[in-house]
Every structure is written in structure tokens, then in C-alpha cells.
Amino acid sequence: MESAPHAAREKHEAGTSGKDEAADETWAVCHLFLSTSSATDVDALDLAFKSCQAASHSVVTVALLGHRGDLAVMGLGPSFETLRALQNDVVRAGCTLLYSYVSRTEVSEYAKGIPKGAREARLHPVLPPKVMPAFCFYPMSKRRDETNNWYLLPYEERASLMAGHGRVGRTFAGRIVQLITGSTGLDDYEWGVTLFGRTPDDIKDCVYTMRFDEASARYADFGPFLYGTVGTPTEVFSLIGLR
Image 1 (cartoon, rainbow, N blue to C red):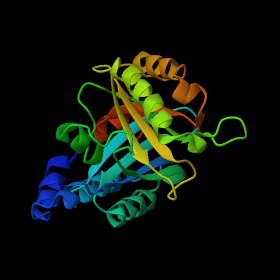
Image 2: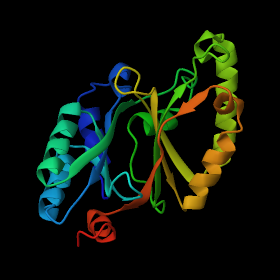
Image 3: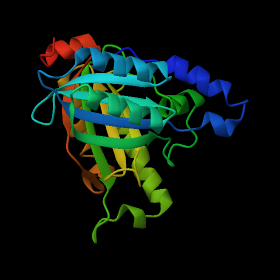
Image 4: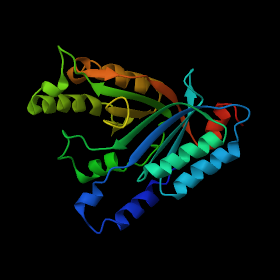
């Protein structure tokens, strides 16, 4: 799906007046997982996506595989109100909302010193990445049980574990683009993880390899995994049988 991140960034930067605090503002993110039918109005869906983009937000469309839905719509940008309007519009177009996830972009407390470009990519990402049609989304939290409680570890130990986790993740550079968004207090888990890969095998290899890292093996709890293929609305509609 062609997105409008550059317009969103220009609008965002125009209102910052050069203040560093404003440059660090997070973006709203909403993943919608939907079923469609012969009654779904394709033209109305097209208009819903374009209206959201015209409000300086990005929209990613995905043809889902499996029983959890036909269509995934990932919206992100400055305003939850705009994403609420997007949700209203896709439902009015004849889609049934089966699952959703609400979060915000963030920079982890363990990555405060990252370069400006990397920080910008996490707070205001340009999506979808090129030549990466494989898509996966899953929520996760850090474990808090009697044996392994992430939040009782000293900060230094947590930071060390996350640094090791990051080193493993960076071995997939060029194969995977990952966006981790924060959802504590906004949804059932603490983070939403969105992966874009060149192939399904890239995503599978990444998730499998990362699970052996101690930060995941000992301290991570995962929710459902949803998989699909990223495309333009026309491509996605064709894949799910709407056109």
C-alpha cells in the first residue's frame, strides 16, 4: 500500500518549532484484522485508505492467510482520532472486525543513545518497506511469574540482556524490517511486533532464532501470530477475492 509518511513528517516537523521534545513525539498505531464478503464495498475501502492518507497518516494493506481474517489494515500517524475514523470507514464498507491491536511508536528505555536516524525510524517509520512483501504481527509481554520476573531484575541486567537480543536481531538486517510499538495500558500485551520480510522463510528464521536468546527464552510471553502478504489495495483485493 502506497503510504504518506513524508507528508506526515513535514506536518509534524512544521509544528515542532525546533523543539527536541516535539521531535520525539510518538505516533499512534492501530492494526485491524478483518473479514470480508461479497457485500464488501471495494470502492469505499479505497476511499477509506485515501482519506486516512490525506490526513497525513500511513496505511499498510495486507492479504491475510488463515482463519483469523482476510484483510489486515495497519494505520499509523500522529492521531488516534484519524485511525478511529479509518476503523469506522472500513467497517461501514462491509468488513467485520475480528481482532485489533492498539499501540504507539516508541524508543526503548534501553536504546536512548541510538543515532538520530535510527530514533526517527522507530518513532516515525516509513512503511511498508520496499521488496518485503511477507508480513507478520504478534503481541508480546515480558514475563512476570514467581520464577522469572523481568521487572524484578536490576536495570543493568535488563539492559545487558536487551543488548544481546539486539545483536541477534541485527544479523537479520536486509532480510527483516521490524517495528516494535508500545501498548502498556493500551492493549492486552505490552508491545506489538510487526515484521516485514523478503520471504516467509525470513520471518520464520528470525522468530525461531530470536527465541533462543535469553531475553526471549526466559522472559517473553507471546500472543497470537498473524501472517499475510503486503500489497497495494488492488493487489490485496485480488488476493482475497474481492476483485
